[in-house]
Length: 248
Image 1: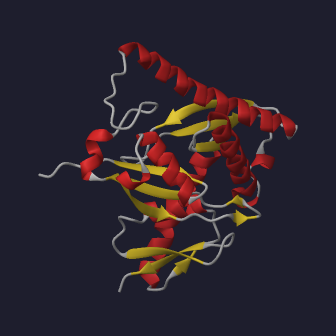
Image 2: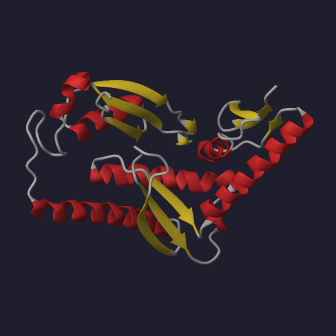
Image 3: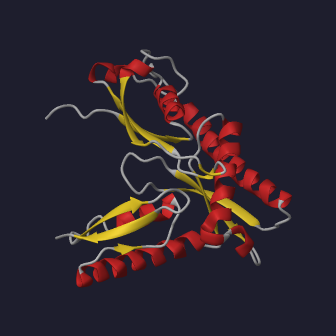
């Protein structure tokens, strides 16, 4: 068996920024990796609610021995003392604290007062970065969700930019309001299954209502193992839709 190659997936506002962040994290030069563009991203409506660019960096075989720990120099072996592990933990706590305080400050400027907490979530797929989930809880917060979650997604996008600028690195940030995203995920999964069964039963494609990119992804993921249909996204932002097509 050949040696498994080192890969890193990065999400950022643009492809170039994602690549730059990736090679910086790996502590190597740009020519030491092959770049696979998973999603070139889009700006969305008025610059808000668009998709982030997503790339996968694959370390070239001859460079695998030269990957350094963050903050060390390329080509130099990392000799991080055990005592530095506490510094790493402190840095992680700083990410959560900055995320929480940033969202709370934005809410206060909006005259919305609520309880804000933050924690890490486990990645859904191997190789993905852990996300920071910021939970907002309080009374009558429906105003923060908006039509088709436009307000919530815009708040999340702005908070992500501010947090990333403060910490000088990209932080994958997700904002949830009183468990709304979890409930919405379950609703979308049920909808996907129901519409897939209808597509198979009628033999006709089923087109869902326009959804933001993160919700379309839930539909695609839910039906990825449903071997009787295929899914595709059609249309232009912000009216892009998922179509469920029965296999012939």
